[in-house]
Length: 339
Image (cartoon, rainbow, N blue to C red; front, side, top):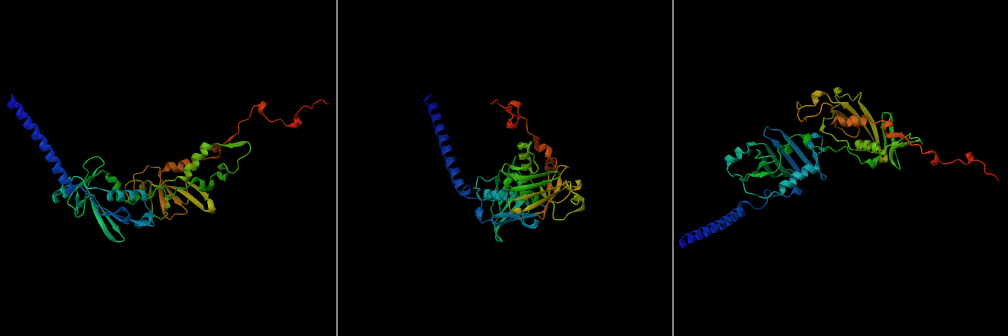
C-alpha cells in the first residue's frame, strides 16, 4: 500500500513538473515569435494605399489634407473613417501564435507573392512602408494574412468583403449630407419651405393653419440626409432621363448658396453586376445629378419616392376650433350694461 502511495505521489510530482516546464517553454517561444508589432510603422505616417486582388484589379487611395480620396475617380472623397480604421488596425497588430511559417503553407493559405486574395501596399510619399498579403478564410469573419518578408502566417478577424477592390466600396456615401440648420429655403414641386423662428415651414402658411411638425421634421431629415451608393461618372447619358427628370428641387443654404437636385431613373442594365464596379441594387435605383458636384450618383429609389411624395397637404392642417366658452369675446358684441 505504501509503495502504491509513493508511486502516485511521484506521478503527481512528475505531472506538475511537466506542466511547469511546458509553461516556461511556451513563454520562451512566445518571447521569440509571439511578441511585438506585426508591422514596423505607425498609422499616422501612411498616406498612400494600393489594394490589389488576385485577378490584377487595383485600387488606389491617397491622403490629402487629412482626408482620403480616390485619385482615379477624380479625387472623389473616400470614407476616411473606414480607411483610417483599417490602417490603425493593421498598425496595432501584435504577433500571435503563427498558423504556419513555410512557403508551402503561404501558397496553400493564399498569402504568397504569386498567389493571394488581396495585397495591400502601404506607403508614404511614394516610398513603400509595408506590404500585407490577405488570403483564404479559416472561419467566419476571419482571414489569413502575412507581411511581405515575414514567414509567419497570422489570422485576423476581418471579413474579406471589407477589402473590396472597387471604388464604390470606399466612397464617402454621406458626402451630400447637410446640417438641417443650414437650410434656409426649399423649392419642391407644389411646396415651398422657408426658415422661420420655428424652423422650416410652408411659405404660404395661413393664420388658420398649423404645421404638422413631425412630418416636417421627417421631410427635412430626408432632404438633409441623402446617401449615395455608387459613382456613375461625369457623363450625362441620355438614358438617365435627366433632361426630363422624375424629380427636381432646389435647396438654399446660409450665405445664399443654392443647390439643384435632379433625379432620373437608372436603367436596369446599369443596376446589376454587369459593369465594372457595379453594385447589386434594387430595381428602383435612381441616378442623381447635384449642381455642386461633377460626379453623377446612384441612390436608392426609396429616397426619391419619399421626397417626391411630400405635399403641402401632408404638412399642414387646420387649427382645431376652441369650444364656444373659450372663444375670446368681442366687446362690441357684449350686451349693454344698465347705467
